[in-house]
Length: 105
Picture 1: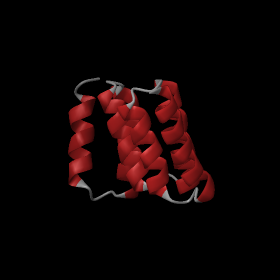
Picture 2 (picture 1 turned 90 degrees about the horizontal axis):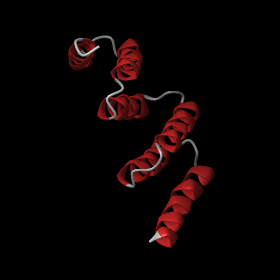
Picture 3 (picture 1 turned 60 degrees about the horizontal axis):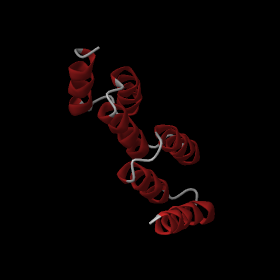
Picture 4 (picture 1 turned 135 degrees about the vertical axis):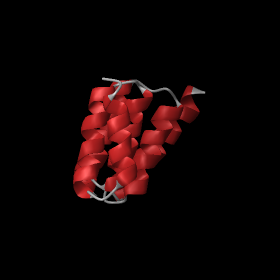
């Protein structure tokens, strides 16, 4: 029901308000939005805030790149994966992922 949805969203938002530095709180809200098929703009805003509050941490960047892939926004997925790679230059799997995605552009 809408009431339960609103209550769940509010609980996630409260956790973020109390501990904005905890990445898992942000990812919980983002994954809640994704599971609920929330408006993509709402999801993107949640990612932007999570990235800002976490200093663009690896885990959030990976989720963000995967979300773009899932929405078939390949160019933006590549851009985010390249940021992941810039922080972890020896990551062969990420290099392969980028090469794979670039073939789809």
